[in-house]
Image 1 (tube, rainbow, N blue to C red):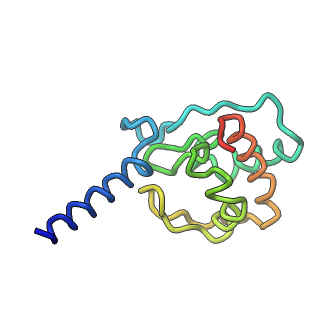
Image 2 (cartoon, rainbow, N blue to C red; image 1 turned 90 degrees about the vertical axis):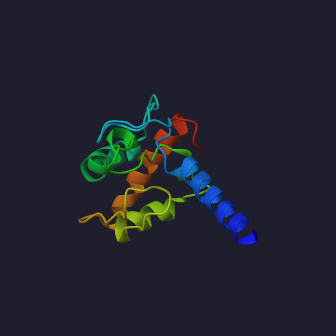
Length: 139
């Protein structure tokens, strides 16, 4: 009886974790490759953020979607509470770009390193993503 309770508890914790972190943010399935979230853009970008927007489009948008909206079945949205600065700091973004990262919040699989980016290239991309996050209430 005790083992059954422990097994049930573990199953509920795993299911709750999936519900909170893996399901599409709206709880519904979407079309493969489609944006996963609606993204509001700030009215203005600083010059650094403009540089980051261009670099994001070239290096990140194929997987993470236009303006970081994610792509269903491909890669998660970066404009999501999981990536708020208090949970994923700027260094975690830089390390993901430079070294890749093992899947841990989503079921998209591991992210490979972004070939051709130098550590200095990450700063404007991160500034751009943070600006878009702020415009969407992610601080």
